[in-house]
Image 1: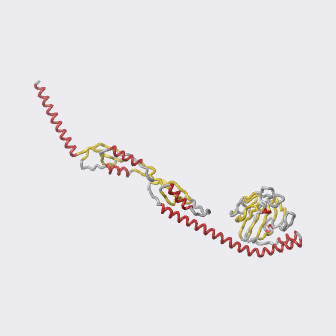
Image 2 (image 1 turned 180 degrees about the vertical axis):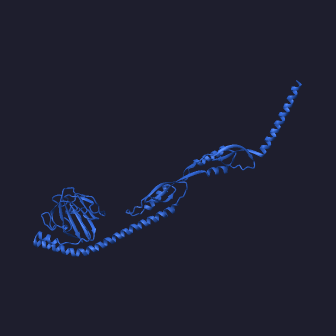
Image 3 (image 1 turned 45 degrees about the horizontal axis):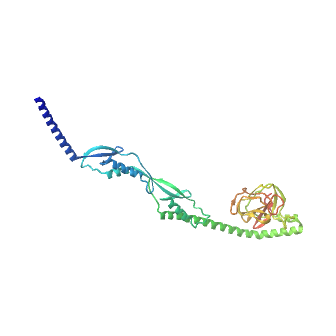
Length: 362
């Protein structure tokens, strides 16, 4: 029994020594080292922290932030943590770790681009701001000028915005250029019309004399005589006409009848109601509407002082100011106005005076 007591006492002594020694070692370790988490991202150490939960909370808060123009944020990989004892001299900074993680996060921004003719010109921060700028640009704008302004959403990882003043300045320059372009086109058109009128006046002097002679001979020599006098060819410049309809001639230029009070100033071509009428030559529609005995009437200016008139239409497909091509549909045959049956009354006028259409077609 004595040996048992002896060895028991020795065991307790040894345990005491080991416990004291361990305590001393642990105390020394905690004096020199401290417990932390080593943080790695994609296998690379980015720092040391003491509170893992705090870091994760800060990262989630940053990812969920969609203030301002932020659309969303994405992180390629979450950080990994390893519990370790490190030398107390080692830098432990939660802020540095958070910043290192934020550097790997991609931020996508949502902005609004203002487009002109479909091409993006400026970028602003909100749709309301874009619409406000567009509304201001459209104020006092001639209705014939269409800037074709639009708004599109723009997603980008770089936040680059134009200030309101910058946007207005850029778009204002485009507006000024559009207005100038329109005004120059209007001035050019006016100049062309003035030149055409001047040329038409010169042509009208000679044509009026020929027309007066034709009417005088009609009174003394009868209808056939009037037709023969008026049949003298009159130049229409380079204009080449095509037949506006196909049909039979029911009344010739220069004839008289009980349905009219003067010499016939055009050519009547009889054809079925609704037959399509096409433009005899390209030009600009100067009149499209109802006009007394002519009924529904279309007038087309072909330049060089030349015009064609299409009367008694049952329908009109064009409007004043519209450009038409040779052979394009402009109306339908009818018997509106002073007409006894469906037909097209066709007039060709040079310098404002009617000439015999059969000098040019039919």
